[in-house]
Length: 100
Image (cartoon, rainbow, N blue to C red; front, top):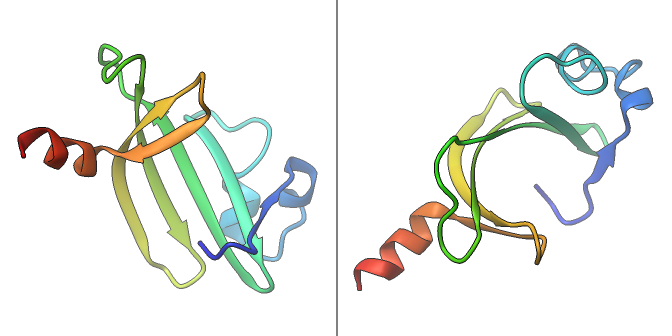
């Protein structure tokens, strides 16, 4: 996502031009946390789900994040999240550092 993208509020999602955003972002979603971002006419929807594993790397939580955008592109990755520092790190990067 570009740096200028801003988070879509729940009330904005209900009347968003993109049906994908209207259906998935906001209150009443039965899956994991779902948030949306937009910049001009572009948008991104992220599904965040806590992976049920033990915390690792000094208190980090493991989260799976799926992202979908207005072009039809998508990706899925696991991330470490440190709640006390409000910091995210791609799991793959940390695993590669451990093996060096």
